[in-house]
Length: 272
Ligand code: KMH
Ligand code: ZN
Image 1 (cartoon, helix red, strand yellow):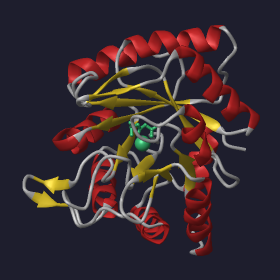
Image 2 (cartoon, protein in one colour; image 1 turned 180 degrees about the horizontal axis):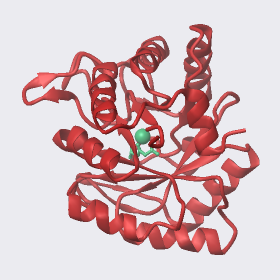
Image 3 (cartoon, protein in one colour; image 1 turned 120 degrees about the horizontal axis):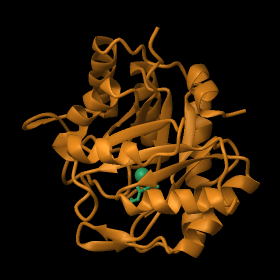
């Protein structure tokens, strides 16, 4: 039997806006509802950002707490992963606001890069500091890798003891300024992963579902959702992340990879 596929739903992110799609959730209630819908559609993990009610990105603890309370209040046992990436331009202190009680995983962005026309700053001391905070709070890190050199940073963090198992790796392909979303790039990154590392691939924009299919075929896990892609197919807006999760579920079943339940995802990811 093939390993179950962990489907992660990235339901809002920091960049997409209602001007681009009316389905982007903003308030804690809307974000929690999007997370619960994604779980009902088959997601085992939700990757959370928060917003102010006017749509500006927020890393405020009060917003993350409300989102998580609402998710649990709906009887939803999805794995909760909070972003420490936040939005371009935020300080590390601000970004760490998301690591509230109830979070089970936190992201760890492994390097500075062009992010569209902006710069996403993750200086190595910042990465070490965020890794330490994740360890203190007993959260499983998800290492966000956008470019090949970030795998060298991953190896450096492991060698120096800043990071230790359990950790997970997210290969984010297609951010303008990072590696493009191609099969060649994904295969190249996989060659550089430490042995026995669990990984997920996230393709940006129109690459989302093709990358999901490829990741499933190569033994990886999948991230979909409005943070990375607003469209279900060319010109057709997804009415929420749940529709993209449903599309990923279909692909997982076709690939002979049953979608993992949250309990299976916790076991695979080493979440206590
Ligand atoms: N919003 C991006 C600049 C993460 O969640 O850790 C960073 C991001 C990564 O979304
Ligand atoms: Zn994110």
